[in-house]
Image 1 (cartoon, rainbow, N blue to C red):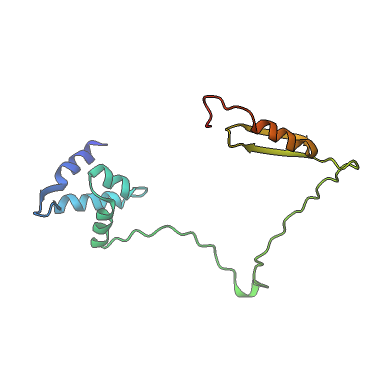
Image 2 (cartoon, rainbow, N blue to C red):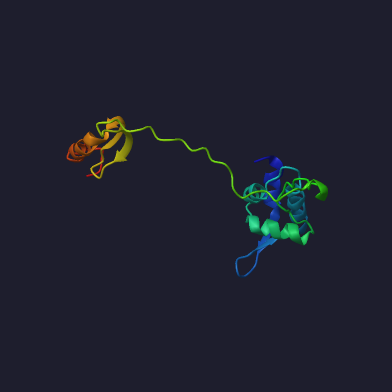
Length: 149
């Protein structure tokens, strides 16, 4: 925090009301609002560094006639003569054909899993016929002390 912000924080709260709410110095509030209006300034960061709720600082900005609007980039509108049809809501998606299974009925697959006993595995190119037996065997393994079980 800079010395300027520390000094502003020190001057900002001048007292407390009976219900515990703070009473703020008018000049210090105006200085904080001015800091919030600087390019690239973060209202929430400045409020936090000055010990004030960001919503309170946003209210002061509104009271001072400054409304911080989110920046919205707007694309230029094409002249009506150039618009031929409304854009489609659909887009082309390439479809890849799965490789054919071998004649003997086996198929290689890629499988990743974490079993309830904590065993995790990543099988690449395993034959589908043998995957069930392998998963059963892995599921029966005892857990180490570092896994749940």
